[in-house]
Image (spheres, one colour):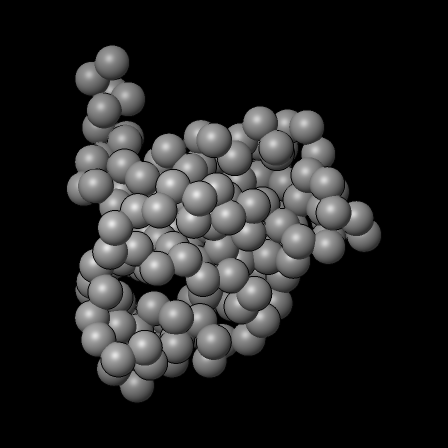
Length: 162
């Protein structure tokens, strides 16, 4: 652990060398550029213990990840809960299983105070470093949603009122 409670951690999951799978990392990089006070940015998570290490001392953990699931719409941004993700074959486009990692964290007492999952539907997770156009256009939206979550603003309710 990093030695103290942090207000928030943003965890950008994915592989920046697998095209759209890097959308979580791209969004985390953008959030890092914003220099948000009290927010730690983490990328390059490759296994569950790293994820537990990243979020266990945070009041809020915002996980941003590329999604592959049924009825994908490349570039669609969603706020999900763990109940939206099925263990082993849910929304993630790689091998870090959020449901099982969350369960392990619960058993070990290593969960954040609150966990928010933001996903972007991906189109191409083949080799390469560029996001596809639809997914690249979604990065500012998911970054904005993450900023709203960190600020305590419920983006979904704000959209409903608009």
